Amino acid sequence: MKNFTITENELRLLINKQNELIKETLEVNAKHPKDVAKSTKQINANEYSKTLAQLINYYKKCCLKEETLKKELLKLQEVKKEISNKLMNNI
Image (cartoon, rainbow, N blue to C red; front, side):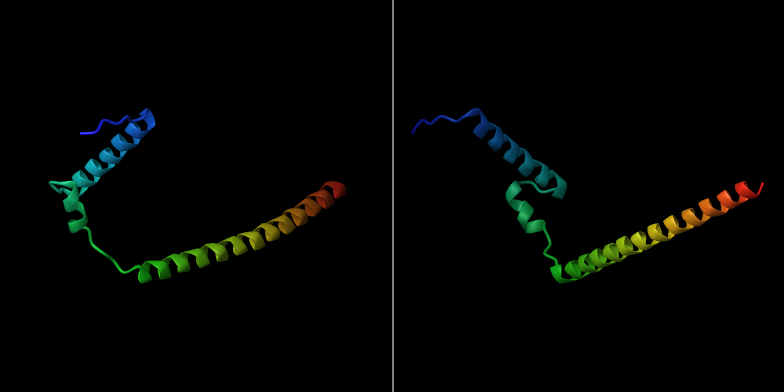
């Protein structure tokens, strides 16, 4: 058997990888990490991509609506300021 050295960083990476495998195994209630792949389900990504695209489009529309509402608010605030100035001048 050949001896080799491991750096501290490499050891940390190995330990972290094993921890992830153990966590996956526990989450799926598998007895061995190799059994995790057997118990996972494959899903059709087309539906998720459509939903994601719809959400992104809705987000963009909301941003555009927000811009228009901000502009309207600024206009309303200007009108409100003018009215209050006129009221103060008339008193």
